[in-house]
Amino acid sequence: MPLQTTITSVKASAHSRREFIQDLVTVCAESDIPLKKNKNATAVSSEALQTGRSVAQNERRLRQTHLPRGFDQHMTAVRQKISWKKFAVVVDKTTDARDCSVLNIIIGVENQYFLVDVIFMDKCNYSTFSQAILASLHSNDLNLNDAWAVVTDNASYCLKTYKEVLKEVMPNSFNVTCLCHVINLVGETWQNYKYFSEVASLVTWMRSVFKKPARKRRWVSFHIMKEFVQAKDPREAVSSRWNSWYEAVKYHTEHVHLYREFLLAEKSASQAVTNILSQLETEEKVQALTVKLTFLSDGCSKLKTALSTLEGTHRPTAVSECKIPNSCRSCSALHLLPSQLSRL
Image: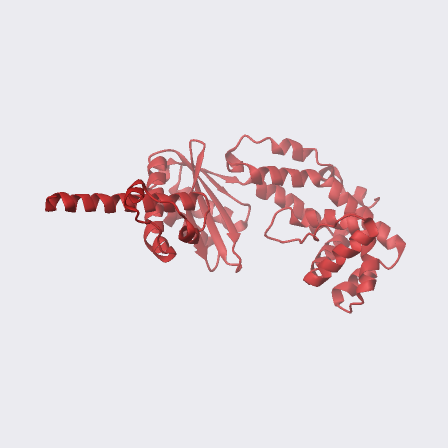
């Protein structure tokens, strides 16, 4: 075989192998399959089937070489889809496991939405928020005159960023407050309403009580003994998770009648246990607390449904055709005045 033919064949074989590995990494990333699984994979390319050569790669090499290449290809394809088109900017701030601020920037074009940036920040305020958005839009080669909407939550620094910075550089846009955040704010008003302070305290103290895994296991056993059914794990109210407070309220509504007996059996001297037992020391107090728990659980159930539905939509809420607001208007808790609450 001529030398030139051999060299050409080797190059073609190496190129085919690299392409296959790149495709494999892309499929793993899209399917959320850890790259370490490749070590046990038996997948081979058509060229490898003929030669018997494996394409298995070290995870470190896949992560350092092929994953960045696949990411660059993906972002190039995204930029081609969003360039020179009218777009909406959807900005959402969340927190990671270490409680650091994470800014997700999504671009919406023709009913398609693309996550173009995930920015980690030590602090999230008016200055860092505006700088991050503008830097992301410029790095993705977007014409700011093509922006027609900027979707943010209702935080003061978000509104200030749009009014004082983004509106000036995006003259054709308008600010939209995310409907999910608006509904969540409505829910938070009930959490902070003084009439339900006992409920808020119970939710906080019960979270402290059930921090110990051993106590959770004893609670499950106690519940089976009393109710003859398997109890779910106690719900925890987490400030960064929508609906978690109302899920905790619903759980306590269903189980508050058992708490006093269970906590007395625990013989714990912790402050949280002492406070809860004080709340439940008489039958009258238990009944009064149950009424408030039931009211919040039942009356605000449509707020929970609305948030769950909106979180599940594939399109950002502010630019979707979702009819959730109509169902929210019918929520019984929203129609009650403080004077009516006092008669409960």
